[in-house]
Length: 133
Ligand SMILES: [Cu+2]
Image (tube, protein in one colour):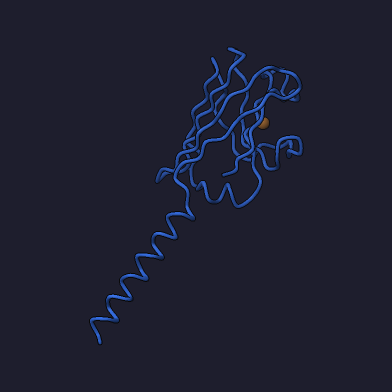
């Protein structure tokens, strides 16, 4: 009887651990679409690490340094104040470790990766991708 209980308890524990793994994504790949006819588009990958979320943006269409941030909101309905700054996208690439946060936390609300035209034209948005699974 005791052995049966132990077996059932172990099976339930294994199931709950599997459930936790599904609920906490370790990778996310999102599309980044052009805004305002910029012709700039690409994708971003988010990878969970112990220190935070490693965000890599790949953007086609521009080689200049372009301010890149995670903003609250969705593309088209975005909060103007950046939530998490990312490194500028230069030659179409930006790689940043966003510390102290998880992909699950990002997915729990609405956030988007937003790319601005240039340091001089911060108000011009050229590309955006919603962070969603
Ligand atoms: Cu921004």
